[in-house]
Length: 469
Image (cartoon, rainbow, N blue to C red; front, side, top):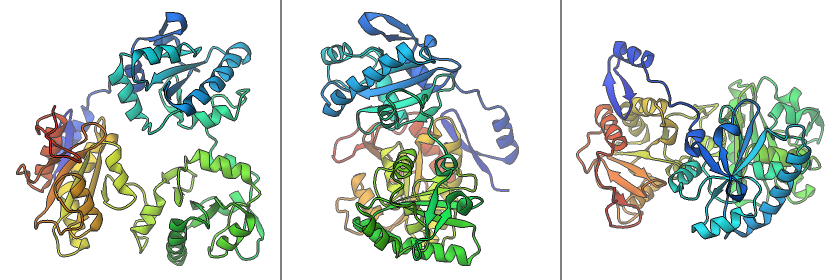
């Protein structure tokens, strides 16, 4: 049996099966309490300078809304009075008035702006001087724009929804508190779907139950959608021919029904009717669709497998990886490249005769390291990507990391391994240049050294300066 890779704290290493089993059974317990509560600390600021104990707003039945906002942001200035009105009425009249608290997490540029803006709010705030906690909260919930309202279970810290702004603003009487998103099964209860050729209606759940469901958010006016639709048609033909239990549903973003029907005629699966706008909006909100085409893949129990279905289908012409469950080690492509925005990513560019051979090398050197790192505490932040040396996107990523001056030029011979940490350090570490061997032992050691801060200074992304740590 091949040795396993285990991560013990900040150290990853190869071990035998017996030690791996022992390591799993003796793994240390996670830090006390959910990470979000640790970041909030013991006390928050309350209105008029009062202190609010975090313990008073957490616990069974409690709900917390983290409000990421700033004085300088016009959409925030527009939303804050609306949220304040809803919050105030909730505190006066709602049957669960003691169970909800909002916490302002400021992106203001100075403490005076924070104080002025917070003075308009009737809820608690993270103290302005806790800038590191603020940064960690933004990272934890992948906040990329403001205003953002993240609603959490006050007992477990579990995310109820990251689309709290839409949920709350469309429910001013808080009838749906705590705004837990409905499941696909609940949303589609009583819904019908229409066939592309005949327009015949079929009960939605009757058509979807017991199958892998592909929700295809697309529109005729969108050029990338028009390019992707034939690929999805081909994929569906192959999956059906292979006897797979799968169904797709077109959720249209078209501006009129005639355009939708014409576009739908090129598909081989049913659609949500154009007139069912309420369900359409709820599906877009439920699956946080920010752009199209988006393909959401759900299992037979309507649980999300991936929201990156477009990239999965586009990179798997034979549908060999259906139903495209995310893997610790992924091929670099248009869908997975965004991992670089989310946390540290180890990218391995392989010099091999072809893509199949490159995948074999990457799997042997990095698959176990990726699985062990992602299974360890903090592993969700990590990404592991591989690419063939001739891949155009790999060339652009190497140029982004400062390992190539021209994103169009051929890369030097040999494997290249690099850790890129854009959100935390805005820097890259050339592992190959540091003499790291492209093997499970070499790369696991590099990950351990990075986590322990032993790799030294990284090269600043987009510049020639060294990272100062």
